[in-house]
Image 1: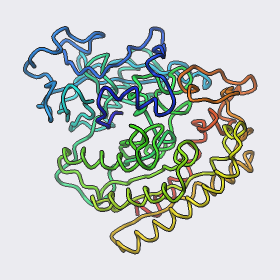
Image 2: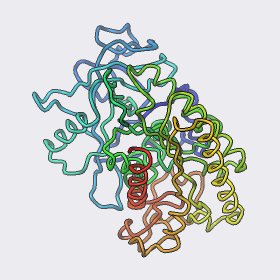
Image 3: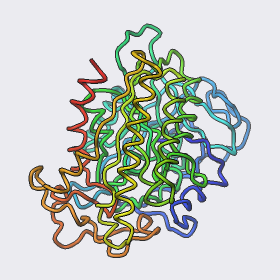
Length: 451
């Protein structure tokens, strides 16, 4: 899901911000045949989503094709990718995709709508359509079933050809809406990312063999489980490596909210008051980038201010778990320092939330979800929640480094069922842990933000 308009020349730098030399990394093979390495090509062929873009991709735009240099695309169509897990083995999270077929006639399925784009030197990020996420997912499930593929659908995304990135389809809101929440939008980092860094790194980070379809886990992340539980469409601005403010060229929380505002200006009839926002960030500031709790919390406060000023009225702010208890700290010497910083940061988040509620009064429903206490209980008493191991990662990563996520990793010999482990890699939870987190968040949201 691609939302950030970063110049082409910065794509590798975006991943280099995580310490990875992407230009040297080979494209992974996530299926029986290697997936293409996407380049962001937006050529549209009426004949279907060709493996190679049409030769005339830089020629003048033909009727019905997406303009290469338009700031806002004409009415057109795009194709639909249906991503799914290749193997049912929970230790094998690799994914691939099929192009959706029209259930009515068997031709390539076409999603009508328009792009918002900024020309050949920028990523074209989002496709606006009246098609709903449920309808697109249904088309994909029928496509997979027709091919005898029994795996669950991971996601349905827009793409013009095999070299296109995975693009979000934004469902245009009805002009007539009631006051209920009708979508979930998430800002944050790799704990919530569902493909933004994967796209930024041209499908190399995280490695597609050991992490699932751009998630920093072996399956869906908490925000996806939460959206399903709440029956809400889900749109994601979170990106792996993000801090609360920009680090090198990786968009931080501040930039993610600015990006959201920019895209929503192109979304007809969008009402921020009908959106549930979730903000879960700060770990990278303290663990990787040497920022103080005060700096990180101030950036979150400023971000929330921007969000509310743009019309947000329902926001869930998630505190940081004690990241110093993650397996990666077994090889570090700063666990005690980071643990103290997390407590300081979380207190500052609570203070910022209280100040914002006092300023905006009853017009703002800003709730703080205490992930710190929740994970403290989990990590101290894993058996209570059905886990066996809360200290080691399922993947055997004895020496974590900046290249860890670039390469395929092997599960440790005694991790036969990752659902028994809290951590998939040395910093990120298993999809079972993500599901458990969503199970705790869902009733909190229903009681405090949806009623």
